Length: 260
Image (cartoon, rainbow, N blue to C red; front, side, top):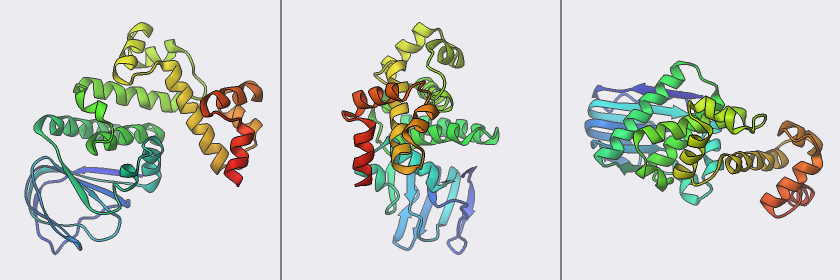
């Protein structure tokens, strides 16, 4: 579902880059020459990140001293879109686009990619990888503006927290559990989350559960009772109460709207 490889060397446009998955990115650390597509030739500049649509072969003409070639599945991209609902996210891979990063953001980007590569090599669970990728896309595309001010250590900690949350939000609600996973005290974790994400652990867990509830109600054949059980609610009435507080309507009203 994801392929990430360092890329370097001399390239000629006669030979296309191979990608296993449809969503493709070229991250240029140091390079000169051109990325050649049907829509035209685009200069390879240091710190430039290309978001490449599925259609068309990707060819390079020039030298890549160092960079990364990333491709990933539409399923992983869908997880990113669930977290980024604005049109800019949906259009990110519609046409070829690129973003130039300053040296500080470039350094963070390369470090995040190195970390992502290690997680992939260790064969982490895909739900875990999806959180890394989603945050990386939000950061490099400039969609998560708050991330730009964070230190590299903060970014890596956010990545780790989101990955742990994704694995355990259905069954774990305890601050102690997440604090141990992060190697922090409960108090320090809550302060960290409030500083970098502006929300407490309780709110972040509830947001994630409700987002999953909407997905299951819209795109699964589970009954409401089954969805409540999947999401860790002992009673369907508790699920309905939480959903109504979050969405402003009951589970039954939401289900009827989705059908219509």
